[in-house]
Image 1 (cartoon, rainbow, N blue to C red):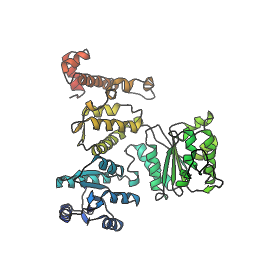
Image 2: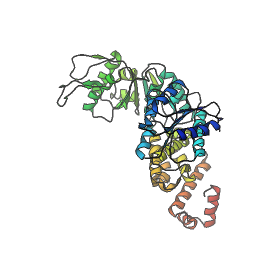
Image 3: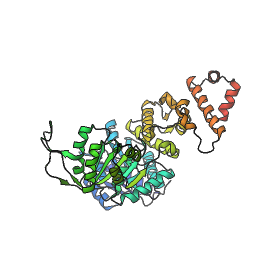
Image 4: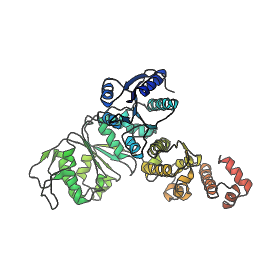
Length: 452
């Protein structure tokens, strides 16, 4: 438990009696308590005091408490918010999570639970304070490689250099790009992102560079491209390796001259931007194959940040799982806070070919299906526990370093035991038959592998 003396908490509620009750509660806990009844007075306090955490009612008379959260985000005040409401809804929960609200409680609630919740938030932020900064909060993980990436982002953000982020799909390349922007001198200006593989080639050019009315059939108005819209800010071009060659040459000129010419325009427009790109392809190989311009590649690859796949940083899986469990429990208004032993074991060994995105999808599905307060195997798709998905690829057996064969065999045996128990709904005799084992041998292996 982090000592609470010296921490500043802001209570925002339009009901005076309830505001005073919370003030007494948190003052007794050792906080420096500030109170406000509306959004203007809240903004004044935040502008003049270093607020460590805010507890805010969702309905403030005729005002929406979410507006103060939005204001803080717009003005770069990184304050964790806990929202209180008597009118819970999934749409409100969804919006609050997108804005970075750390928790969401429904009135009436237990005061001690609220105090513990606030303490946990502050404790978590203290534990995560590893020399990095709040702008990196969205990048989850404690592995050495993630810590190095965070420190590299801090250094790179201070410059205006072009950045190329590489890594498999689903590793979180856009999160890195956004963190670079938030930490840069351009953070108060626009961040514009576009996926080059998700837009048809004939539309991609107009999305990037814009067009003038009458430039082509259907161009009934002037449209600004993202290079013009991001003037003074940052541009993120995802999956840059999928950009067609005819656009690559045009992009090269924009990067070199910081000038863009919309389709159908007779005049060029100056623009100031910081370019960040990402790809899941090996662009060096693409240049050799003639699919990517080498001069553009060298322009983009000034600073390279590589994000390894999740299977190469398994130490991050637990933190990511807890993060997604909390996120989707709030969104779906469920009280799920635990993960069963069998699920934890499967998470440790699952290959995650889709990386962090696949992990998030699995947890979202599991939370949607779960009817208890614990994530159970029954809420996950069957393939998640099947041996073939984890060990079925021949490439997995290429030995680059010494391995402990006994441990590998133990993992395989344990997976089959868990699968047999699941198939027989926990009937040990039937599970033993499925594995062609005697009841005694089966019970011995259950004890050996601590299967309950």
